[in-house]
Length: 185
Image (cartoon, rainbow, N blue to C red):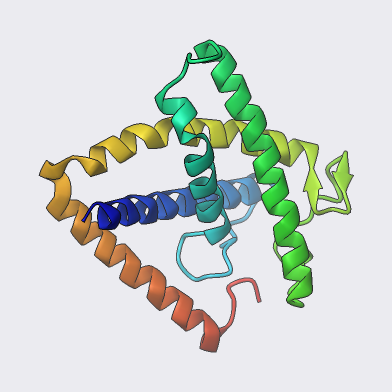
């Protein structure tokens, strides 16, 4: 039962991070180009790379947020978390760009940092890494109370229903992506 609860928590965090990533991308695009564009390759308002990245950061760094001050001060811990998130997000984005290239999709379909200096082959940039660090640090600090809230047994029925509905919607989106193609096409 504890494993199912942990899977539920991680799935809900995945969705929260994926939706927040979608919002971030849509707002950034609207500010830069002046129009709305669904930035996901799926049809729903979620970007799985942000979900996976958020879960990775939560698993790797969540303990530092929950128990600050063991080695560093709270401020020192926050700075360490920021640096770790910058590095991790940059590594994930760089790896994803090479994976997309290997799959024949090409990362330029989804992002392009050639106009942001300094950058590496347009795959990653200092500005985007710093943005990910700031937003990721805030998201990590906000996700700990969220986990406490959804872990509270008195919320189990609405949390379970929400999890099932979101899982079904996400699965349908993944399945429909195959015959109907990408949002980005």
